[in-house]
Amino acid sequence: MGMPTVRPNNPNFSSGPCTKRPGWSPAALTDAVVGRSHRSAPGKAKLAEVIERSRSILGIPDDYRLGIVPASDTGAVEIALWSMLGARGVDMLAWESFGAGWVNDMTKQLQLDDVRLCEAEYGLLPDLSQVDCDRDIVFTWNGTTSGVRVPDGDWIADDRGGLTLCDATSAVYAMELPWRKLDVATWSWQKVLGGEAAHGMLALSPRAVERLESYSPPRPLPKVFRLTKGGKLNEGIFKGATINTPSMLAVEDCLDSLKWAESVGGLSGLIDRSKDNLQAIESWVERTDWVRFLAKDPATRSCTSICLELPGDGAEMPGRIAQRLEEETVAYDIDGYRDAPPSLRIWGGATVETADIEALLPWLDWAHGEGYQSAAVE
Ligand SMILES: Cc1ncc(COP(=O)(O)O)c(C=O)c1O
Image (cartoon, rainbow, N blue to C red):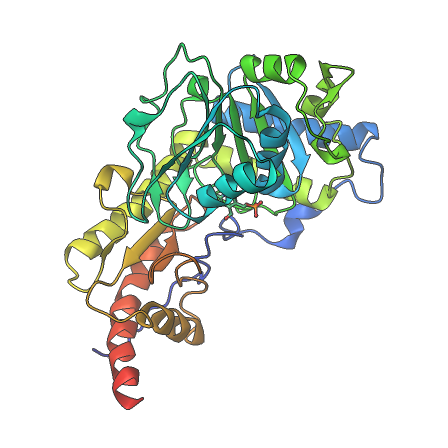
């Protein structure tokens, strides 16, 4: 097969940090409140604006708290786990690397004694019917390294006794989330929004707040984890009075991406953009015999971290393809995650243009053929 002639306009297909919104340039940061205190009136107003615009685009219920916390999505997840868990038994769901990381935290670091693991191999979901909603449940909405997502929240009981703690970082802004089923949800700006890392978002249901105010975990909590003061929720955090100093450049960048999100139709516009990206890849996979989705069940296919395996090829083939396409400046960062089975991973979140995905597909076929040739030479 000859080398295709049309390159994607934008070769950035990384699963995080993800590509900036179409048309982004550093000029988007011109209005950043830099060189001023983040606790000044204009600084606080910017932080509060991030919270309000995020809430409004995502349709987060009015009685949920939403705050900006340190250390990206990881920070938001860790704050929640360390502050809330231990009050009752925990069901931990893991089907890829990030979920497995949270399991490790619970068992090795927090050393909780009543933890039940519900695990599955890459490509599959655990049996969700086994989950006990009277225990706390920790899970990832979209497994970024396997491209397997939970299809919905129907398996979570409305009248649950436990809390649900959901790492939703590669799902938020690209998938419908049933907020009332989620007591804690976390994400960062560097994924579907194409924003910057370093800050996380933490959404808390009224029941999560109740847990924080009624349960004192039997462990020391570092300052950056502390959401309460004198046994009461520190409400300031959820109005933009961050625990420590945020980057006001990152905040401005987040506001830029939120305004862009509004301009493409808000949440439904973002979801449609991501679904179109998945669909473009789905039709190509259907007509291509060397590739298939890592996700076994189509209902669990991610529309953001789209993971593909190459059943007839050796383990080195995805890396060869990724490297060749990087050399051609056609696609960056599409080799599967280091802990995942050999695979390609193409980000299809809302900031990726479907035309760029479509332009990439013939290159994948080409680089696959090239991969055979270079294997023959070696
Ligand atoms: C599911 C999931 N959880 C956590 C993280 C870590 O996010 P961050 O580096 O923004 O803290 C990622 C990043 O890829 C992720 O995909």
